[in-house]
Length: 336
Image (cartoon, rainbow, N blue to C red; front, side, top):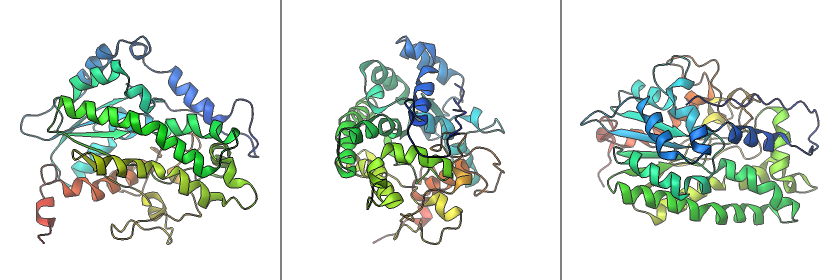
């Protein structure tokens, strides 16, 4: 399955909202370009054929299955990486001599409730049986679909971020529980994106999602970051309530890579610069402002593009601590 690049250019120089807003156009375009088998309910056929085009799991080698939306497609599907050999996730693991194989089932534009549906959950159960790890990227499209309508109804930013979590959490639990039922040995991991929307034109999207933040005294970028990043909180809550789910975080990765001294990826003091968005070079307008950049990616240079930056941070925060995947992690284990 090829990545759907939303060649969206926010041509308006102001942040006024048109009847058909770029944020909605992006998700609508992605959803309209879903594979026909997915649209027609032939999910099992799509799963089988998509996996068949990718590397088979190797006996005795940990296997990672990537599930989710267009973010999952970007980092988990090798066709997106211009070298055409491995995905950005696999590239990060390989560069650190980690031993794992990976495959990807991603549907651009998909939401948590879509993945929680009976057809997709049933088909996903087949795919996860061979996985030792299931890495999930979801909830971003749910935010795009939910937040503006919530604001239009007169709710505060806090009420809308609360409502988003209340909406997505039941579906996320359905997804992880279905995966665990199909494969009790698999570890499930996810994270809540990073701060994005760096280019000036991307203000059209941030103002659309949380217009409350740009009213007088609303808090601007700090307000937006506070509430949009609660998707990370969702993963922390799931991990706290499911022993088979692990939380990870890449927060601050692109700001640190871009030289923002007010952000930190130190595990003991991880935080973003709340008053800034992600650096523009890592969150390009032509990828709708909320996908990591895949242009200018230079092998071995982890700061060269957004996809490299976020997968390197994922390695540092999570995979480097999994001895079965990255053998050197065993030497880093701290005995208390």
